[in-house]
Length: 91
Image (cartoon, rainbow, N blue to C red):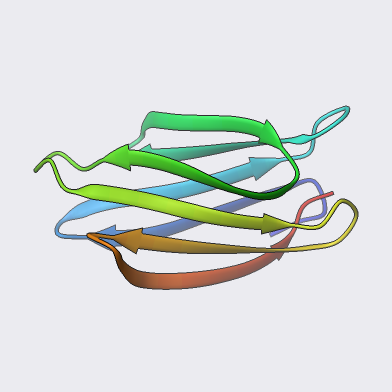
């Protein structure tokens, strides 16, 4: 975690799910990756969701709660069940 970027990672059913956030000129750029492959991204602030599919076809999503100039929370869900929560700071 840093003031300009966050990188969160969790293992789900033998696969690595990552959520990355990097400060941008207007809004941060967020990405959802599975096994290193980007499956969704957004340039945004506030509350938004990144969605994708795992290799087995099951749904994965990351709910991002980012204040404009402050802390962030990322909640990862797999098959509609919360897997983990991360806290960071991306401006």
